[in-house]
Length: 283
Image (tube, rainbow, N blue to C red; front, side, top):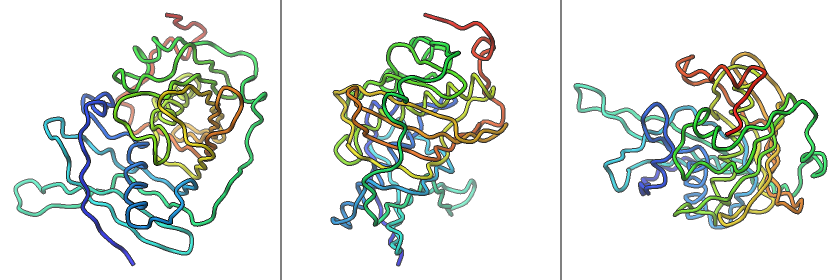
């Protein structure tokens, strides 16, 4: 049985730092938190730490003049779990009618998966040779132009053919880290994957899906983490990564298989020439 619910999204100022082509857009990680919150409200016993088949088919543009946005969440329960999807309504031009647009969906699986095969910490923190180190200031000035709230890779990002290694700050502000952990940590891991795509594929990829995400320990806004991003399948248009997020002492917090990223701009955005060449910026 499907249930459709109206929900309100507070337009907190930190969300406006996440923008695309001049417009503030809701981060994929925030859409997952919003959906998890609704599932928890209407199904208090539901597990949230095992997520499958997440899709982000369309960006949700944030109304920067509004205090809240009216959205809809659809819930559907099956033997596999609870599928939740996020929708908005858009008026059809020159008409009194509107159409529904889907922005995100995910299944919160019923089975409790406590462990998933993960790259050992000592291997995750020692990527293969041939790495370049790109300073975080350069990343957020020239490769990923988000505002301060979403600049959470710290220090240098190590990037080589077999992946990337990032030090990540847990972030700050009003973001909710009690449901699925800090949204800023996984978001910054996606930044590392984006930089990898810019260097080795020559595109600016954005997250469009996650095959499976397991939260072993919720990340927190006031802590720091290490993220290892490894390409699993790559072609000219679609990139798939595996991601592991650790505490500095090696405790595994999240494991993600099938982080799906692609160029959603149809070539309107392209990496700067230096990132794919033999020279790079240090500061």
